[in-house]
Length: 223
Image (cartoon, rainbow, N blue to C red; front, side, top):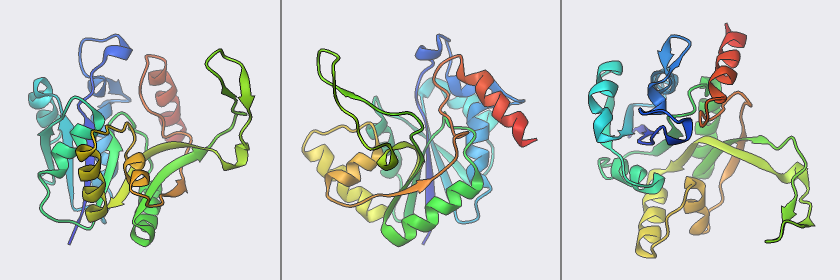
């Protein structure tokens, strides 16, 4: 049996206000997608990597990423559909490790820590404790409650699941016309608990222009 990583790379650069995939932006001499894939190629517990991508990015992605353990699948219109397209190419495995391609600074030790927890509990996700006090507001913008900050995490990826469990969850979601933006929600939806694994604050998601210099500063701190 094997563990397979699915790296999501089918998004656009619309929020970055660029006319190409944000995953093709340079980050310290490598593209964002190369750095994301490299982090998983370093993990001995991962046997195969599937990258979802847009049809127009196939040539560029495949020229940048040539390792024989990596294959490519055209993504869907939503995150859930992109993961499903990748899952449909897998006959059998133990764990699937789902990661945002826009998180190029994930640490190998954090990935390995999450894999260990997923083996024990069937579902695990990286996340970091919320630093700020969080307020819940009503529709008019007035504060209605203040959750206990000690119980709050900002979820990251990878999110790692027993393959059979994930297939059960995604089949139920599709049957009931649910489309979740977070893979943990799929597992929660069928009543299975997800183990939160404390990760690193440097595991940021590249979303806006301001994130590039921030990511570059984290890279420099590692060197």
